[in-house]
Amino acid sequence: MNQLTTIYISVAILITKANNLIEVSMIRRNQQEQGDNSQQNKCQPNQIKIDEICQNCHFSCRQCFGLGQNKCTSCNSISNRILWNDQCICRRQYYEDEQQSVCQECHKSCQSCLGSTGNDCLSCYDDYELLNGNCVCKLGYFYDYNNMECRQCHFSCEICNDFETDNCLKCPFDSQRLLIDNKCQCPEGYYEVEGNPICKKCHIKCKTCSGYENCLSCSSEKLLVNNDCVCQPNFFLYKSNIIYTCKPCSNECLTCFGQLGFECLSCVAQSTLSPNNTCSCNLGYFLINGQCQICNSNCRTCAYSSTYCLSCSTNYVVQTNNICFNNQCGCTSSYYMDSNGICQQCASSCSTCNSTSCTECPNKLNFGPSCSTTASLPQYCTSFDINGICAQCQTNFTQNSEKVCQMQSAVICSIWEFLSKVVNRLEVIVKPAIIQDVRFVILNIIYHQEIATPVIKVV
Image (cartoon, rainbow, N blue to C red; front, side, top):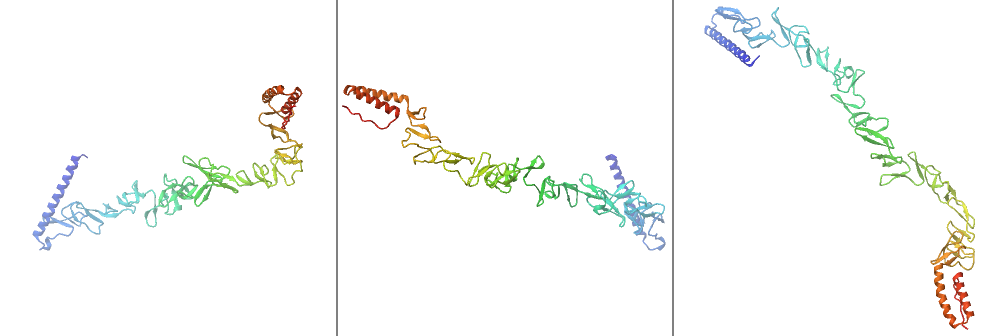
């Protein structure tokens, strides 16, 4: 229908209504002019006088201003009709029974209808929807036969046969709910929000929950602590994208953090947390399988096992096999105990010693690492080995094959050259025999290292 046609129809309706109003006005004026003096000239309430003859109004009208169903001015109050556009039409939930000329009640499910049955509906109430002439309960509603009305299902149900939660027949689409024992329940990993048909997802760390981060249960690798899922001891929560998994901490940590698990928050028993977030076993303990185990009583510190000693308790020494040996008895005189707890003999010149030098000499002549075997001391020697033999000579001296310190050859030549000049000068003023004695003394000084200077008398 175009706009021009709509305008024509609207104008025609207005003209018709105007003519009706004019006609009603003229009739009422005639009635007023004629008066009501004569009972014979008065018509019945449902009649109208036309050409001085009382004629019946349309059966639907109580009073009218002309003949026809659209000429009514009022309706009978008990006829279930209402006045609308000069017509007495059946009120809502009633239909026109043309055979009996009365308004009959529709089926209770209908808001308006064409007949009395439940499949004659034209429109429905809010809780219903029209389906093939029938008013059926909307999705999410059920028909209450006791009260003859549609009632809303529990919010968790899409289709039900009762208001109770355990009478669901189908769950809402995209609600994440599962139909279990006639209940639409939130699955594992989702939680219920009162009044909301859609299940909300729990935080990924929860297995089940009553709120986003209010965990009720956890996966097997986590523990439930104050409604929170935390990793078991020696594990930490590792996040990769949106996935949370528990990964093992470093062996020495009880709890830890960071991406690798090396940064400790707390330590296993018998260990201590350092300021740089590392744990180390206490003295006398060693780490094995993530636990600090006690060392053998002989060990002060140990590793790998309780008997693999790194250091020993008092009166014990570490042997080559890393076992602590009891050192309370000690070694006899002229012996010392090595690092393996074995008694080793001192150098023959020592009365007592340690691993590096003599500690006591038989003739009380104790010179550092060794003892002198004679009253005269080795000259020009600055250090000795464990056997009392010279190990190093003084500057400008060197050892011969017998380990005796001798003056170096360059020094000897220099001294000989100097003394030869002295002797040559002496030959001028002394006898040849005396010169020979002088030569002997000089050689004796050089090769025998005697300190005393001989006195040469000039005859």
